Amino acid sequence: MKILLNLVINALIVMVLAYILPGVTVDGFFAALVTALVIAFVGAFIGPILFWLTLPLNVLTLGLFTFVLMALLVQLASFIVPGFNVEGFWPSLIFAIVISLVSVPFNPKAD
Image (cartoon, rainbow, N blue to C red; front, top):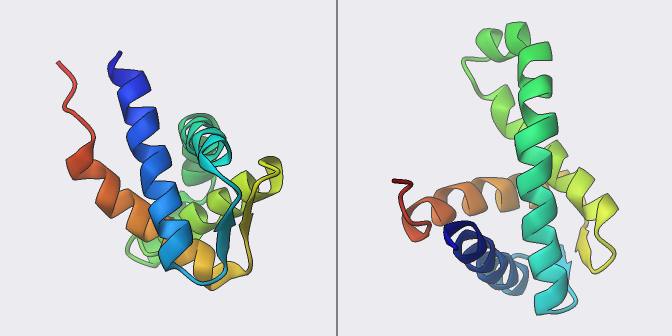
């Protein structure tokens, strides 16, 4: 039940960010829900592999390259989900940072 609640909260955050940020569009709640699901899967499965592969660059930039990787993962989600579009690197970077910061207090803690 908590996973479903997290997914719905993240979908609402995606819809709000698409409304606020220029260059980010979402076609509706279902597209936002699929986007939240794809971002979760991409972040859970592909993200750690990319972070390990780019660890030297991440250490060299004092962790700032993590934001670039997050933006690339959002671009990948934009490519996968038909109703979600992010136009360019900077909107995807801002989207990734804001969704990371905003989703933390809204998601319930794990037991």
